[in-house]
Every structure is written in C-alpha cells, then in structure tokens.
Image 1 (cartoon, chains in turn blue, green):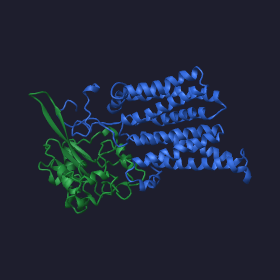
Image 2 (cartoon, one colour; image 1 turned 120 degrees about the vertical axis):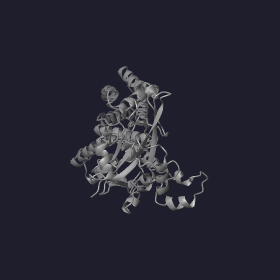
Image 3 (cartoon, chains in turn green, cyan; image 1 turned 90 degrees about the vertical axis):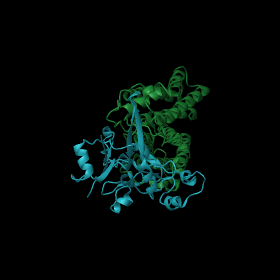
Image 4 (cartoon, one colour; image 1 turned 30 degrees about the vertical axis):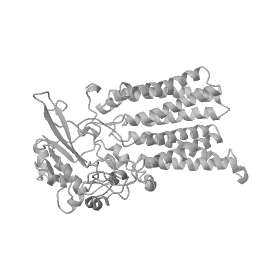
Length: 297
Length: 204
C-alpha cells in the first residue's frame, strides 16, 4: 500500500495509523540534554578535563529535569520514577544518571580539593571515581534508547539500533563540545569526531533500512522520514547539517576556532532535529481491519 | 481464579456508541477522554459501499507492555487478570501510553476537568461527584469497570450494548459465553504479532 493510500486517523474514529502524541517535544529536549551532557562528561573524564565535566553536568542537572518535569503529569511524585529498576529502563536510567552526577561531583571534589585531604589526583580513589563516572555516563548515554526500544508498540522504535544511536549521538556531541572547550588534543578529537560521524551515518541507514523492510508501522514511519511529511527536515537538518557538513569541515581543517564552533553547532542541530523527528514519526499501527469483507483485512 | 476477558461480535455491532456513553457515565469521564471507542471503516465503491464498526478497549494483556515499562509501579495486574492503574502512584510520565500497541491510554489533564462537559467552566453535580476519583495529570484507561466486577456485575459497556456485541466473562471457564464464542467462531486477538496476549477477542 502506498503512503498516499494510508489512513492517518488522528483523533477521528476511523481505523488507521495514529501518530504517537504522548511523548512531545519536552521529552525530546530532556533526552537531548541528558545525552549531550553525559557525552561531554564521558569525553571529559577520558581527557582529564575538569571544565568539560562541569559544563557537561549543567544540562544534565538543569535542562533534563526541567523538561521532564514540564512533561510529567504529576511532577510532585517524580521521585517514584526510580522505584522499579527491576523492570523499567526509565527507573534504571534515572538511577544511573543520579549515580553519574554523584560520582562526577565527587571526582571534581577530589581533583580540586583532594591534595588538601591527602587524595592524590592519580591515586586509587580518583581512578575509581573516574571509572564509576564513565560507567554511569554510558548508562545515561544509552538508557533512553533502551527505554524507546523496549516496547513493541511503536514499530520503528522497537529496534536494537536505538540504544546504539543514543550512544553514538551522545559521544559525537560530547566530542564536538570538547573541541570547543579544550585547547589540547584537538587533532585527536577531530579524528574521533570523523570516526563517529561514519557509524552515525551507517546507523541511520541500518535503522531506516530495517524499518523500510519491516512491519507496516515501521515502514510508515520510515516513509514519513524519508519521503513525505518530515523528509525535508530529515535530509536537511539530520543528514546534511548534522553529518555531511561537519564531516567535510573536519576533513578540510577543523582546527580553526570558528570552524570548530560551526562543526559543534551543526552536530548539535542535527542531533536535536533527530531527537524531535524520531518522536514525531512514531505511529501506532491500525488495531487491525477486523471487517470480514474489508479489502484491508 | 478467573481470567476475565471480553469478546466483540463484529456482526452484531451497529456502531450506536451506546457502550461509549455507558462507559463515560459509569466512569465520569471528562470531555475528550474515552476508555472505549467504536472505530469505523469504510470500504467498497458505490453502489456497493459499506461501513464496518470495530469497538476498541484496553485489551488487559497477559503480557502487558504498559505494566512492564511503568517506572513507578502504578500499573499492575489483579488476580482476575484486570490490568489496573493505581491513581495514587501514577506520575504521569506517559511511558505506558507509548508502550501500549493499542493506544488505549489517556493522560488526564487538569484542563479536561476544568472546562466541564459543557465547556462553560462550571461543573454539573454529576461531574463534581465523579471527578474526585481522578488525579489530574495521571494516565488512565479502561479497568473493565472493576468496581462493578467486584460487585458481581458486568462492565457498563456490556450491559448497555443493545445488540449484545460485547460479551464479558471468564476466559478460563470453557463454558463461559466468551470462551464458547472464541472457540466456535475462531476469536482473534488484535495485533497478535505484538505478543502481548490480549484478553479481548474479535469474532465475525
């Protein structure tokens, strides 16, 4: 069935595809803040950069909770989101994120004031805190992908590629921001960024190829992204600005400050566009055509 | 213990929406909020054009994805198989709503209650007595009218249906009306490929 023949029933009482409307832009911004911040924390810990860790924590402890609370129906009960780590990725992620913030703050404390209380900056305690921050940063970078891929309701989300997408985008934005903050290791960061943009492009191809050849709901979402409603935004913002232009700029000299700023801005814009679009293309499949005479049956 | 479920007889449903009204009355649902809907589907070309009606409701899945993803423990399954939402525990994150393949969950927003059924901002006595059971911001859905089931009654949509298109009962009892219908008329669950094991079936 061609997409122009598909019924998008919206709020009407017709059988057809329904756009998911439960997770709105607030959730996209919350996911974006967490993944961007955790990515920068991850890269900064690897590079021993205190400014990077501090700047990375800012969106995690401000934007992420702000946009989540703005979305949540009963914000006063938000603490309850952490009580079912045995079955919910939301709970696991919230605990992982809290642990990342805690270990990163302790790490910063040790790095800034450790000498005064006898903790060496290359000692065991600092190494342990670095390892813990890295592990919990990876949890924060990926859990939102797991939360989306965990359920079969929205077919294009129900993919093992989404946690990988979260990690790659998170790492890519982390490296992009680190290139703005750091004054050393820029060549290494630029190479790492180029190496991340390639799997990002491959990830998009894998996700959409699987969706295109998958269930009717996944195919419908892929069509919305590649051909119809959101195609111009996807090709322009996510692919061209988010991946192709940064790759070209990095290839031809990403070591100039203004160039690094443009690269970081482009990667962030592409990532934010992807976060918003992946929510917007989510569709529920028709409950089924139960009619015994229907040609759709 | 019983395993409560429902069967929709598509040949009997005439799309009168009496079930929808019965549900809204029983559950004091504000404007725009539905626990059950009757979808329609048109097919064929004039003069052979036709329309069919497909009732929808929470399917009270045995492997309920909404329950698995709920981070606050608000969604749970009773011993009789009814999937419930504990209003006092729900945080309104809507994770369950995006996890339900049947799009059967609704977040109750404060404005839904405030505007009133007539849109004037004033609540009728009926609304005042009924809205107290809900917390604005929480996510709700059909619970097979659990208050009626506990009292030994059928859900409101079932008793309201004038054509007996909704049949409710214990799916574990081979002699119950829904079990017989499923067996004799090859009852089918909605979206079986989602592997949620719904306890709602359709026969035609």
